[in-house]
Image (cartoon, rainbow, N blue to C red; front, side):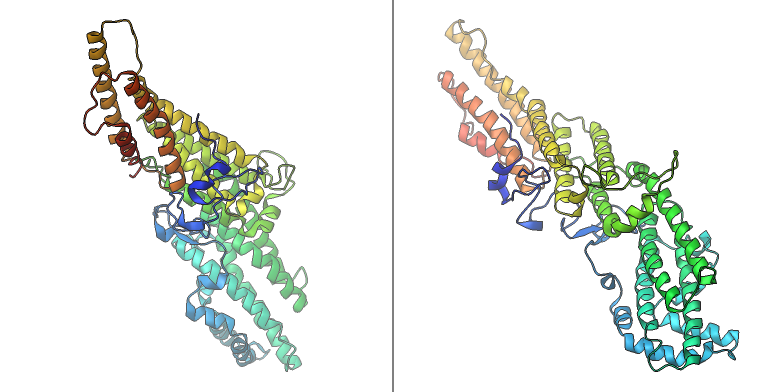
Length: 495
């Protein structure tokens, strides 16, 4: 009686047949972002939340979304991006600054040259950060500024590494030695940001920042060590090792807190029209951002520690995905289910759950998240959505249609006529109440909106038409034909 959301729904919106369960689903759209899932992002495929949101930001704000599949240089200003790409210009600056790092040069000259060198990469601010890595270095900064600096820092470190690789070209022995001193001073200064990130208080932003910093430190510093023959006991090598350990601990701590963050990090104010909660778009985007550094995430959280402090497993298994991803999405679903009980109007809770489940699945299957979810995950939620539709119909429209039920068919015709008229009046009253309320409900996705309208019409209109056919003695008021009733139902869920 009620639709199963599968390939038959393609007629509503051009959906293809790709899903992790091997069946078709309206959540895998061929037509792309033009069909909204009702979330706050304007492009469900390409956008995810700013990975370093301010504590006061609303997750529904369009400014809290940035591109997920981006080159990091796109996150910088045009001016700094041009500077970072100009390797030859940096090389010329390097040659001009090397004399300050030759043996006779004083500490003051070195400090000034190091500041000029780092400022040329737009990361001169690392010198002002707390060198000990305590919270004073980054805790005072707004979270968006921390994110901006992390991205600029990572790009600058990679560019420095490429410039340092040119050390043997047209350089004297003394210049090579000076270059090693410059590299050591630069690397030591750059570690200040990494230590400051590791010392931040636990938050969703900190996990992404720690992963974003962990990658370049783990990749660039070993290269620098081999390039300049820094052994394990060299101050830079030792500092890098300690920083990596701190970042691992920070990431594991944040990951243990993620479930609590999903439940409480952002305000769960309920939308009164049953539409997609803004936090769904935020958290599904956050999970996608988290997987940008999936290799490092797997390494960081895949430790072999035992006990209650051990991080959750993140290794691919028989389910074909990261257990953490499935667990976090399930946590989000559980919170939505709990919060939906605040919607007491009959049927509104089911519409809310339908909208949000659809948004979660659509965002999952249209992104890399689908690679880390178990087989049958999509199918289970398709069945769940079909159940929400059935629950909605039972709560909202079964009582309306019940007003048309006949009883006591052997009564005198005058009594039957009066009862039928009263029954129709009760039906019209219930219908108007339901339509009046549900016009204000929101089903933003046109596929779901079409399915719900069709289901309502297929249940109410035939029952009404049969009732009129059984009771031809009752005059139908103007505007109450079956066709006009169907037209009235087509205005539902416009918000």
